[in-house]
Length: 79
Image 1 (spheres, rainbow, N blue to C red):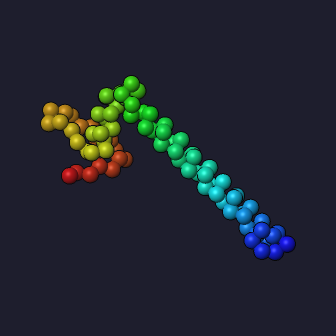
Image 2 (spheres, rainbow, N blue to C red; image 1 turned 30 degrees about the vertical axis):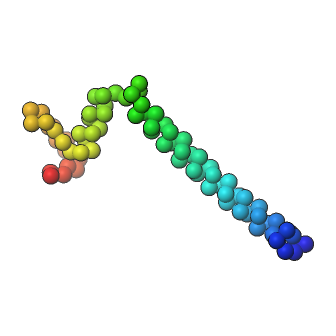
Image 3 (cartoon, rainbow, N blue to C red; image 1 turned 60 degrees about the vertical axis):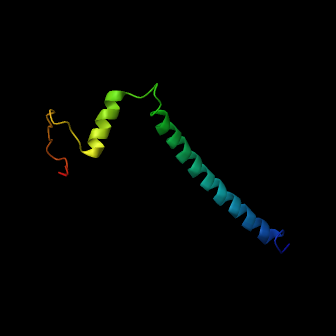
């Protein structure tokens, strides 16, 4: 009835199992999301124009001969 393998111990173990199952579900969902994002980086599914666009946007870069159109309502940093 009591002790690590008694009723109280069993309730504690069941609670730990529930917590670990919830954690496993979170980690599994995160892994699934990461796998999906990584699959977009594979050469057969990678769009070079989209990659160029995202890199320029994130790095805030443009070539000297390019025209940059600033849109109202967007925040820009001028480095």
